[in-house]
Image (cartoon, rainbow, N blue to C red; front, side):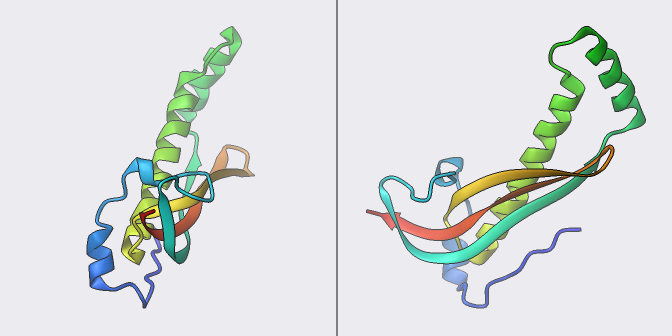
Length: 129
C-alpha cells in the first residue's frame, strides 16, 4: 500500500506546473546546475518490500554455480529500484515539486529472502538561475 503525504501549502498551480519531473531534474547532488532552489518541500520517498520466489531462487542458484551475472536477480533489483523511483517521483509531484535533489537508494534485508528498497530525496521547486 502506498502512502502519499500531501503538503497543505502546495497550490493547484504548483501541482500543475510539476505535472512531470524529467529524469534530468533528479540528482544525487545537493544542487541542480543552471537552477536555483526557490522552495524546499521536504523529504519524499518510495518504498517497496520484495521477496524472491521459489522459482527465482532455483534459477538464481543454478546461475550461481556457473558464476557471472545472475540475471534473474539483476532484473528483480532493477524492477524494484524503478518502482521505488517512480513512487518517489509521484510523491514529489503531488507536493508541487519540479525537481528532486539529494536522491539516494537504500536497501535492507528484513529477513532472509525479504528486502526493503527505499528511494528518497528532497523535493524542491527550482527556477532557471
